[in-house]
Amino acid sequence: MTESDSHVVAFVDIGTNAIRMLLVRVTPAHSHKVLMQQREAVRLGEGEFRSRVLQEEAMERAVLVCRKFADLARSHQAREIIAVATSATREARNQAAFIERLEEEAGLTVHVISGTEEARLIYLGVVSGVHLDKRLGLILDIGGGSTEVAVGDQQRFRFLESLKLGTIRLTSLYVPHPEKPVSTEDYNAMREHIRSVAVRTFQHVRRYALDMAIGSSGTVANLADVAARMYLKRRRERDDVLALEQLKGVIALLRSLPLQKRKEVPGINPERADIIIPGAAIIEVFLTELALGAIHISERGLRDGLLMDYLSRTDETRTLTEMPVRVRSVLQLGRSCHFEEAHARHVADVSLMLFDSAKALGLHKFGGPERDLLEYAALLHDIGTFVSYENHHAHSHYLIHNADLLGFDRMELACMAATAYFHRRTPPRKKHPLFATLDPQAKRAVPVLSMILRMAESLDRSHASLVKSVVLERNGSKGTVLEIRASQDCELELWGVRHHLDAFENVFGQPLEVRVARSEADTTVAEAT
Image (cartoon, rainbow, N blue to C red; front, side):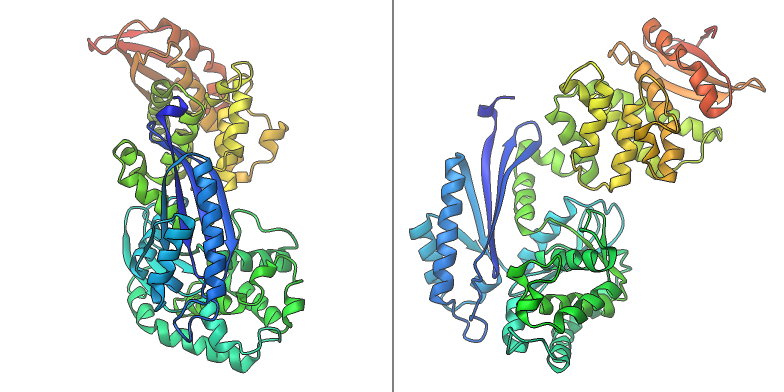
């Protein structure tokens, strides 16, 4: 793949509080690479929500940032700059004048999108980076002027709505003295206003059996940062969630402090300190009204949704965007490492045949989650050759563990990486440093998964996909037999798999016999072990 085979696209989100840009290189290989992410707080909606007029100073700040972002995108030879404006702009009576200024002074053509379209794009952005599968999630994005609400699973949304509830809007209405502590009276009035505005939304959303809540805004992330410092005594980590009870404690602390002291709270973004309490109130009311005990944090939002929407409209990338997020992120990593995809897919297929038949025999008790991790580890087991063939299993481990694959938690990545590492050379040992750091479930799974991957890799040793099917069956009282059906002679594969007979018995407690049958004929030729 050469640079000329790809093109750069910029996505700009002109929000009420901040302007964000995502710069992406899109390739014909059904993938994309993020080149840059930029964010500038401009407070475009400051002073607007009572007069419904964008203020001159706010527009000046926005035009300046948009011009800077547009110049930056063009310096990277961006073919397109896709820019949208949201709540502050769509409600402003001087919207047309502002859009014209962006065109003339920043060279940016901006589309003002509806609240429902904003909710749809946020949904697309969030689900592109989280593994929902069939679980139903409430997605909450709190902006400066509006809050977007979506309900959906991995494949489609069920409900979309935009509410006139935002951090800047509520601050202007219910925080008369931002430099002072927020009184209980003002905070309670704010919560009642939120309930009143969202009452019909709550009625609709309660019809769904929600499995989880996901917050996609900087407000949610920053509140979770404060909670991690306050309750966990450390920085927030990727898989941390913000519990409702923790949120209430954070709110009590922030409300009690004047603005200057609020800016000094560990974990807080000082730029948000004056508007963060209304955002916290929105989350508290939603979690309470919908009986949700916590909210997960997503770093994705509208600009990522713009990217997903763009890719879905592009023929050469449509196949990848229609895939589940975990499959998509695994294939993107594999392709970025120029993996041998046909071999990787065949090893994954053989691994799943071995996993399923071993489970049917009672050789292990693992289910769908471990089966998925085995498949992904098999797809990526050889990506380390991108660095060097020598010790490529160690390079594969490093790449999987550190690639920040979307839709996986830390221990899932650790399990996949360890499975890939132990697919060659020595089996896992309790004191091995990569094995010792795994959680108890992964420690039980990795010996089984890596054993299966070892066998599957050997069964495509020639990289010619000669083995068409495999099955583990009971071998009387003697143990287990591996029956292989091949399209032609597969001596290299048989030689490879026989090296694992002792390891198989150590893991599964049964001796293994190997038999091979040609797929053109049904007569089985026994192979001595």
